[in-house]
Length: 82
Image (cartoon, rainbow, N blue to C red; front, top):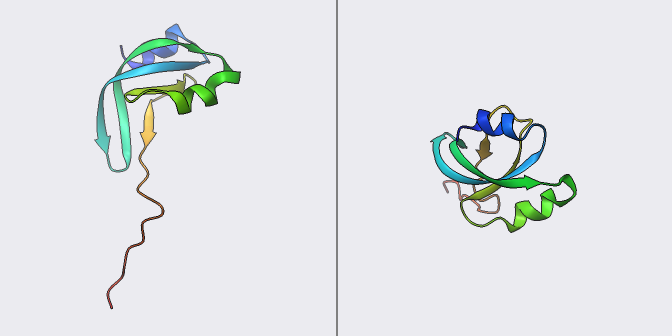
């Protein structure tokens, strides 16, 4: 299912999604195909987000696109030339 279809089916709410397909651009993973699992109550969204299985995501349908910003290891130090 396309993200726009999920937004229409679950307007203005958090949804637990199974990610079926995506593409990467720079530091972003743009989700292109999902399978909605269920709506998530706002009070439970944070807990559900951190407990989601691999390949799943909790996302709010107020977002026009389903984009995951990829973070490089912020603790990794890069040694500059001597």
